[in-house]
Image (cartoon, rainbow, N blue to C red; front, top):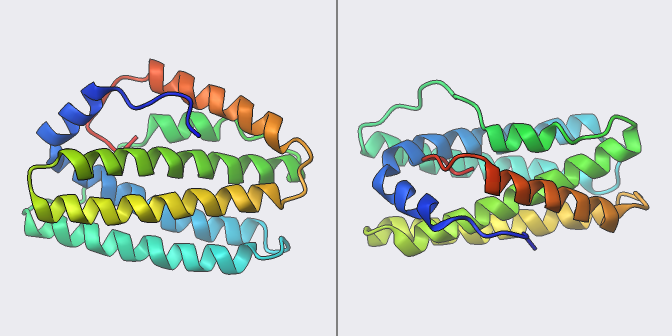
Length: 187
């Protein structure tokens, strides 16, 4: 679905500076769990969304626990979240009328999950440690499921401009991948 692939320089840097990527990954999982809960709070009236977001928050919190265990095993600390310019730039695209806001938040969530799936899969293919490769392959498959969940919810949200809005956000996402500097982070 994504219009551009992650540049090869990202994979090389992510493997070389994996400890930094791992810390960022923990922050991503933390934010994903919190985001799912915020969607539940913001849109409790949308059929199927509250239960789906409760399940997603639980799954993302489980991933956070697994990544935190890896941090501890490697003698690393979570530290402060330095922010994610990629996700922040996508979130800035959210329109404010309620119906449009719901569609945009769901579509942006789908894009973030799709990019996460791609990058976790790249880690699964490139990391030298077999245990880490297996771990990231499992997480990549999970992210693909989250991407499909958000797309399904967006399609069913009643926003009549689903495809044109998805196309517009895909173009923004592609521009961000081309323009933002490569850094040792999931996004």
